[in-house]
Length: 346
Image (cartoon, rainbow, N blue to C red; front, side, top):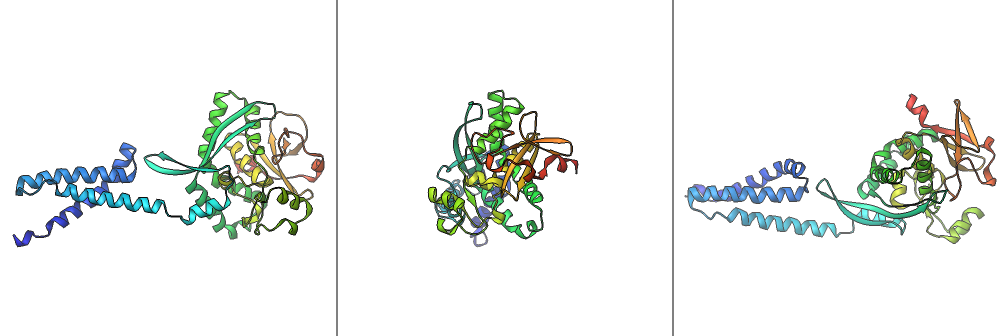
């Protein structure tokens, strides 16, 4: 009898280990969370093993089930405590996001996922109304920003066009929830190619303008009059410490803080995903960035490699394709930094 003393601990450890190993398979099979799969296996194996041992040795058939329940209660308690701790990630998100962003939790492939969401209602340039809930995963927001910051030294060697392309390519897969919602709107309202492009651009135009600085945001009096007036009207319309003064697309959708090239890059990414020929135009003279779209239209365009890219202002509402504000409407001061056709060709 002395030799069998204490074997119960080893047997229960074996049950726990088996449950851990098999939980990923059960999770994918039943589409439940990892903890739920582990708990299901742990209780099931404990019950089966307890009955087998009871038949052989007449020992308590339920002791392993009781051990399992105690372990699961402890794990759930620890998880609840950890979920309520103010983590760095949550603090970082809260410090930057617009008040129009809220956090919500959904279940995705059996796991609990936190989203940064925005409920949006807007009109396109022709009076058509749209609405929807648009989200990015909080984890994607944090990871994409970290990758962007970690790659600053590599990006420093890039031209503006290559930087824009790099941000668009890296972030497009993480915009999947927003892309899906835009696709749903297109289908429900049977939008044609032009109408869909206008819906996407006005979706971004509708977001209030915010300054994006590579340095930290400072008090309004420290800036030139044009910037000072923005910050005096809206002290929170600024985000600082961002590489090159441009937010990555997922970062922008997670906090709604974006200026001209932040907006042109996300529209470039979205419309490229849906198969449009898109360009980004910059002007050192005007210190601004706008979109270019090759599509049947009227108005001002930039000719590039035989294609007409009609210009589109993205920071102000109500500007239609082919029109620019008088303050920067000389097309000779605009230069194409990037087209997705050149990257498709490569």
